[in-house]
Length: 145
Image (cartoon, rainbow, N blue to C red; front, side, top):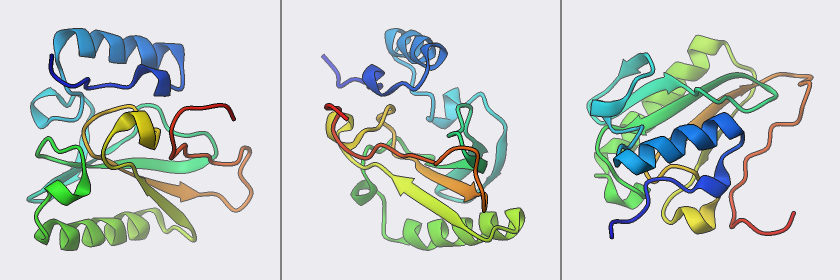
């Protein structure tokens, strides 16, 4: 049996969980370019950038930086991809005229890193000076709070 594409326990809403269950059943990775349905803002040789369909509360902007190749961990990418990633982050920060940003990347096994999709992706969020809600990223195994 192939490894799971989704970690359903990590879904943040019922509609997100239902979406992931449907994709898992059909063997579709939402982030592989041939299945990507969201509008792509821009792309480089190794990555594409899109808005998160389920943005984290408290963010002004929430982009996903996604490798075009289906990889589960950052160390599966060539070293050259690192320079592209830095350039993408600078471009997004400039575009948003952001005073503060945060990035989170969960790499490897979703059961331990808090992720929901087994395709490496980097969350790039623009933060508000006085957010209505504290932005929280889960970056650990799913246990008691």
